[in-house]
Image 1: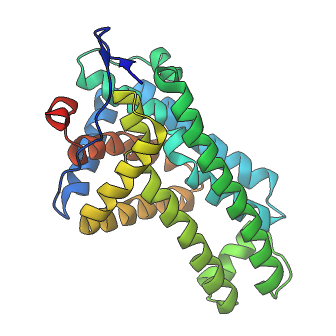
Image 2 (image 1 turned 90 degrees about the vertical axis):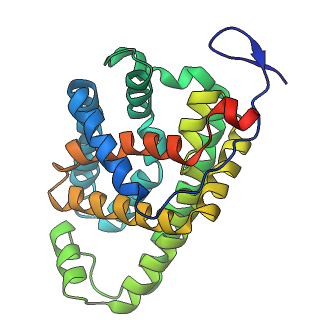
Image 3 (image 1 turned 90 degrees about the horizontal axis):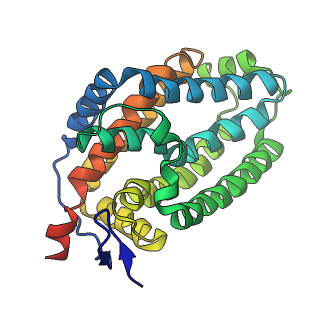
Length: 264
């Protein structure tokens, strides 16, 4: 089925061609992401405060039922690519010389709403399954009395209840790997080219398969910066999430050939 590009010409998006990049490429993506933040601080930090606010709200509401907080916080991370869509829009506008503006990015999903919606449903289903799996792991393997947030973190740092920690993080890693594989470039690709959701997810898996070294570094960087954000009581998320969001756009640009080159 044909689609219409920005010039109003009917086109059928070709399957995206994946590039090979070096293992150090994620460091360049982060540097470019920081540059986008510096160039567009107000709209970027707006999304950063949204991330931090959501994290604080989850922690506040579920402070004394941390089995739910763990599931929701992890789900928050699983849904990160969707939540960062506005940051991709900011980077795209800056790249196209359209200047920094918040308002257009709030509805950037309208460019390809149907396929972005399909991807959101996929992430939502994975999140719900993970949330249920998290509760099951707590029920089966958590042997101590359920603590509050500070007590839970203390037990982790003291390496108490090692069987629970091993199972919980193993299961979480499986879900995180699935989401990471499907979402490396999916939403930027759908926003930039009006690509369908299935092709975008396949391209993401292809980018992971062709660049395992870079993807391992990228996944570690995302996890490390996110942990730093949470360990600063979510304050660090105000800056770190925009950097990661912008960097994801530059990862897409490095990993996927431009549309004309891919079609040619």
